[in-house]
Image (spheres, rainbow, N blue to C red):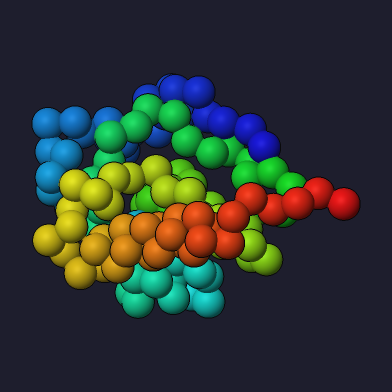
Length: 122
């Protein structure tokens, strides 16, 4: 995949609002049917935004599962594996149910992976 190295060079929408890190300041459009959609249960997810880089092309095996209003990729996932990457910080928004659900999913997947142990290569 590839990155947009510096979002202010390609959009006027602020993506680096560190002074509002505990606020939902940016509505994200969540792709219906995506893993993310199944976890958060909403079509539009307000989130914090603390970044100046973003995914441009997700790369082989990954799909976009959320975008900001300017089209910036805010979440990617692997449809056939428990892989989900987000550009915001749900751990700072745990008092909001959708973000708490996302964080709980991550913790649950980490625990499942730990219980199953390392995968063996063939």
